[in-house]
Image 1 (cartoon, helix red, strand yellow):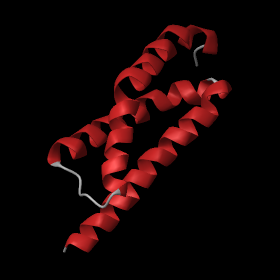
Image 2 (image 1 turned 90 degrees about the horizontal axis):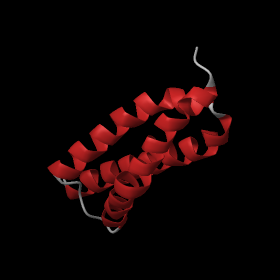
Image 3 (image 1 turned 120 degrees about the vertical axis):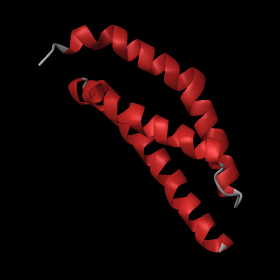
Length: 93
C-alpha cells in the first residue's frame, strides 16, 4: 500500500478536475433533474463516466481521511441525481 503523502499530486489533479469540470456540469444536471426534466443521453454518458472515475479515485479518498467528507458528499450528490432521474423517468411513462 502506498503512503498517503505519495498521493498528493494525483489528489490535486483529481480535485482540479472535480472543481473545474465535473462539479459544475453535475450541478447543472442536478438543477435540470430537480425541475422535473429527464436525463439526455449525453448527460447519462457523462454521469456514467463520472461514476467510473469516482470509483477509481475512491482508493485515494480511503487512504487520505481528510477527503472522506468530500468523497461522501460527492457520492451523495450522484445518488440524489440518479434517484430523481429515475423518479422523473417513471413520471414520464
